[in-house]
Image (cartoon, rainbow, N blue to C red; front, side, top):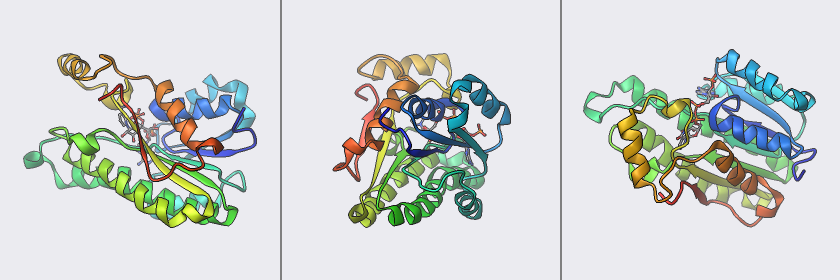
Length: 243
Ligand code: NAP
């Protein structure tokens, strides 16, 4: 129960990796505010699945790419302090650069990178006043491998790491840490469209020869978000089976 009485925000927390992260915090006693961008069915299912924690769960729906929406979200929080922010919301829109519509480039950058910036900006104002905070940004191994067909995604994920390193230095004195988790392949909706042949190829390239689970990612997040991780900031923790 190491997060008892702590307030945690997980963006994109109603399904996929974010859901696993949010549920792990709930099990450890936190109040958890999960956000999503429009899939109400998934949000309702999250609430039903986690009925036993209903007094500790809050939901909110907005677009992290919208700076004003993020500011307004922080003005209507159901709790005063924010101990942990996990920037997990993200999308992919794959295409080779030569064929990539500018809108697809922009949308992925807007949600994955600018969304992380918007949420960090609002959170550090609060965390600075508290003199405590943990921010964990969910990046990807694509940030350094740069898989073909994912220039927008790779740029957004590499950008999150740069943002994390700079911000960590700005807020270190106030006992706020800012780190990244870099999950390898995790079987969620985000990669459900990958052809089976490609999935088998990717698994062969992973030293552990399998995709990871949301729980394995959630355990890494939970560590970086804990009070025990007090001297770790500006880092990237790979949870990728050795990729
Ligand atoms: P997912 O299953 O597709 O879930 C994405 C979540 O993000 C959903 O809750 C979605 O809300 C929310 N979201 C999307 N756009 C949003 C926006 N504009 N504003 C607010 N919320 C938004 O994805 P996932 O696989 O769990 O991925 C989560 C994170 O892990 C992403 O940052 C992704 O890049 C990263 N990651 C994933 C993998 C992987 O293999 N799956 C590997 C490395 C990194 P709705 O439900 O309303 O759509």
